[in-house]
Image (cartoon, rainbow, N blue to C red):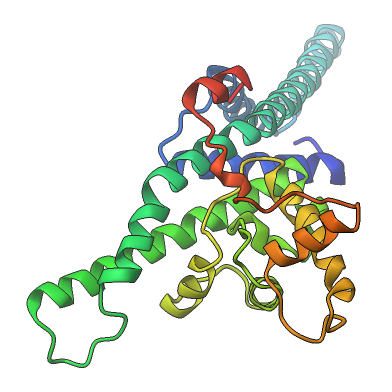
Length: 296
């Protein structure tokens, strides 16, 4: 079977991840991807079936039969080599096509996943963080027990969505742009957020990974939960670090904690305005119409 380059192996791995995410969240992959994967599977099976080279028959030919025997055997072996080569070529081309289509689909999957999470999962999570018991001591009512169980279920759903979004960020190349500020995939801090709270959130996600506990989600929730559409996480990161750089302009020289709104006002007064922090970037909601116009 075909020996793939490291680059193609990486592309195939990313493509498989994108396809797995689509399947996990019920998103349909393009028809071209289904055709390519079916062809790759069939080509691999055909190559395995034809992997044994034709051998000489057990009965030796007579001297008179030898010329015809040689021609027949050589033709069979040439045909075998050609069939194996064609099957390998089809397998390679089908895999490359499947990888290309899946990777091209990754931004669209990220858009759909983000919209669904922001519309359904995060609002429900915020509601349950406010209303459901965060701990169970054994004396709760059946309703409280059910609410706590629902909170845990929605947290698992939110963590799963963030994990998939992070994988898609790697596939689309966003991961390299975001770096250690992966928390910006999950939060969009507004003007009331403090530098310390945002820095703590960035460090927690960078060190501990995707949030999976009630406490971790509660801390992030205070910073405006909003899964980032493609390109938004790096914009959030740039805006945050630009406004954070104004700490030394405060009367205390950055010794005290300040809100992003305070630092944005200082930057504006100094003639170097940053994103105003009059509200989170996610307040600009991507409607289905705008997503279609952007090719989502």
